[in-house]
Image 1: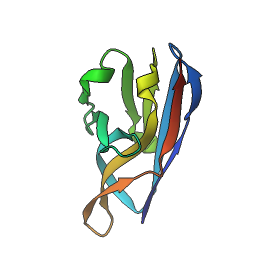
Image 2: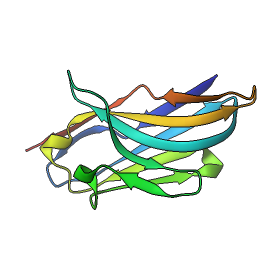
Image 3: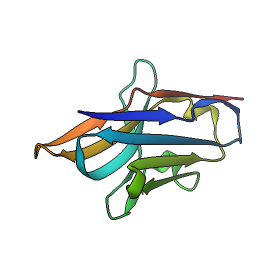
Amino acid sequence: QVQLVESGGGLVQAGGSLRLSCAASGSIFSINAMGWYRQAPGKRRELVARIASGGSTNYADSVKNRFTISRDNAKNTVYLQMNSLKPEDTRVYYCYANCRTYSGGVYDYWGQGTQVTVSS
């Protein structure tokens, strides 16, 4: 079993900043990619940012130059620093990790989601 626990969401005014954190724990042998997705009600979940085990990153065009993803491999934790937030960034944000478990399987895991609300 692998669990992802997110923290850091909340309410912020437009132009403000928030930092999301997500810690993975459980039967983890290694973690490949980690990332953040977001979803609005009635919409598909969309990629925000992704970081590979070696540190390479990619971002959705809508968040480039405003959001920064990073990870601490020693802590099995991924972060998302969100600056210059806009009302359209209001979504539920989900953490994601692709993990190899001690049983040998490779699986995708998701956090429970954290609400980010940006007021205008």
